[in-house]
Length: 212
Image: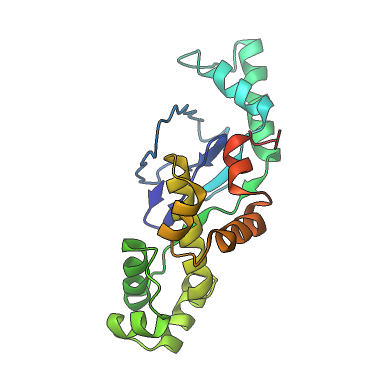
């Protein structure tokens, strides 16, 4: 899912929260079945104000499937009102997942970001990428830290991880996904994946959000 602010990867058994009036595009990888819930603004006022990826517990999954059987849920119907508020309570309580890639706003940093997005497997040193973007490495590092709150190196790692996750969602093998995303070895990718998401790629895509 992309907005002007960045990119979010939404693996299986996860969800993306998109506040009202946020222009966005959604691209699917592989065979996907998606459910969408829309909330009236007053109901969503206590939910996140920015986009984010969320784990979907087995309970929330069943609640979503149940809600999607109806065109509209109404608070005035007692049991439907209960269902609405249980879903909202679940959304407040569930864990966010670090699968966001924010866009830098400065044109020089954005040129570096776009070059990396065009080819996540590009292993050229940052100095070369910055020179092509018309800025020094020091300037680009400062701009990334200022605009997105992380170094360009960290941003690049996140890009590679998210690109690899898209490939895995399409059915790619771990080795292929790792090398196509710029990792020197599959073990380096698995290590980064475990550090970020707490499990291996194989288990992450095999299990539900509860880890079972």
